[in-house]
Image 1 (cartoon, rainbow, N blue to C red):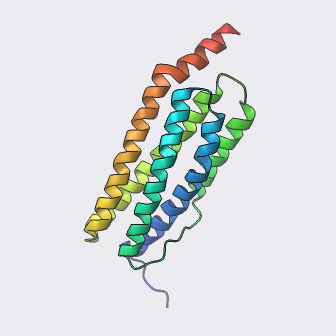
Image 2: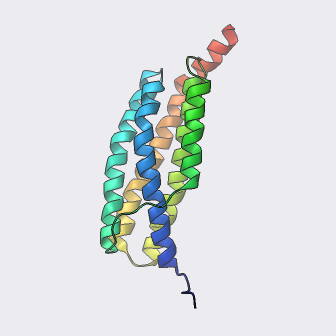
Image 3: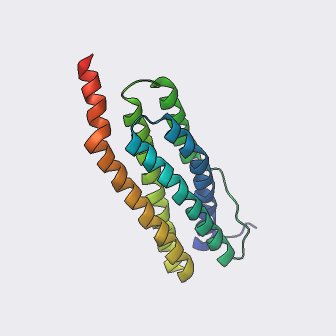
Amino acid sequence: MTKTKTLHDLFEDTLKDIYFAEKRIHSTLPKMAKAAHNEELRAAFEKHHRETEEQISRLEKVFSLLNRKPQGKTCDAIVGITEEGAEIMSEYKGTPALDAGLLAVAQAVEHYEISRYGTLRTWAQELGIDKAAALLHATLEEEEATDEALSRIAQRVVNRDALAESAAH
């Protein structure tokens, strides 16, 4: 007879999913930073790379609170988004639209992370795992701040540069 899956099981599975995602994002951000032309965008990718290290550490603390070994589970969503990023880097290399494409992919990642961390934080609260909820909330706030910073860079510089360069041709 199969065991009935619980919210706690779902919490742990989703935790494994975001752990895999953060590790994948951590390895992808330096490539995006290197590909970016705009210095402000490059700096944002580098800053998020450093933040991701801390976010991975927080997730490892959550696993520890659950008496579990940190373990990832393939996250098809992040695999797809990072593959899209690699495709944009290849197809738009050397073009003014590259930074706009990189920024769009970065925001897709952020929106995924915001969704996951918001859900995990809520489940941790409902499961009474308050220390985990606090750790997840700290990461959620960083992800939201990164998304807002990327939006400002897009609106102030990157999209305008891509548009101006397109109009020149």
